[in-house]
Image 1: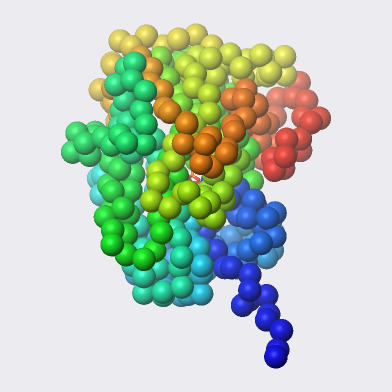
Image 2: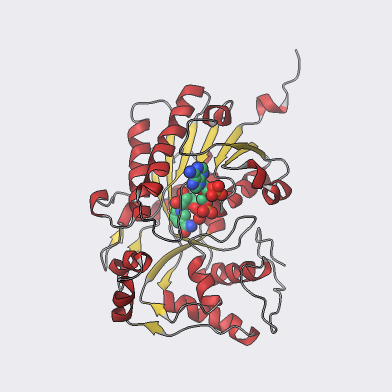
Length: 357
Ligand code: NAP
């Protein structure tokens, strides 16, 4: 009898949106496991040089969440799919459907292609804490049983993630494909090949001193490497199918983020804004900025998330937020997204998977 080739015995995993911040780390960790063949979707293959250089064994294919084209081919032969791609705009779009349509219809497209292809055993989707808490109610602790009322959500991103995750659960109801939802907090930590997206904007703005002060906003954070780990574990965990998992590390006020940045970088020539920003000032500015308008309901809201399931089922423990913040900053500087000041000292210690200089 002929020996099985690798392509028959090693499971094939598709990671959607492979060019993104979180997906880069998922791809890296899956490759480190040496137990999978990997395929990744991007919107435009011609702009993926750094992705190809970083991950030469990743097979890159094109597919857009707004289009049926390419999804069936991307999923053909896959045992697992990790659906990460979703629009995460830095600025609030004028038309909310720009974010909602690709998130919701794209999720249905990916799941429909999984059903059509027939080989997919499990799909892990990336949701968001906003699909648990919405804007959040001060003092509450949220669990995986919580869902916001999508109709009341003002912010298109929160609405898109809530509706997309709901669509995923409704789609798989009564079908053979297994679904797991990973629900991360605000991602911080090093960049691999992606550009800094919406989540690193907070740290970037503090480091480059481009905000007048820190709004009184509470951030429920998690390191991007820990969130990526959760996806990798959820792919094969026996307990995971049918479950949502909140993935959260330490939570802190934005002012405390700025203090951590200040402690590390003020001696390296960086002016770091550590003062607060009065709510009245934000309210006034929100009349002219949809971005601030979306943030207003969160001012002063201190909310918590239960991580019991994350710890018990997935056995994930999370890094200290200080490490994630500092790694984010060194990564932003070393990759040229924030200016290298004269007193800048490249980091000596390199955290695992962080690829810093
Ligand atoms: P990111 O770097 O912006 O990655 C988003 C990815 O989605 C990119 O690869 C992007 O492709 C892709 N994408 C966007 N619109 C698309 C479309 N129409 N068709 C195909 N692909 C499309 O963001 P991220 O921080 O890694 O986020 C990844 C996932 O984690 C998202 O589902 C996000 O909602 C979720 N999440 C993020 C955070 C956070 O704090 N960052 C927190 C909780 C959950 P292009 O490169 O072509 O633009």
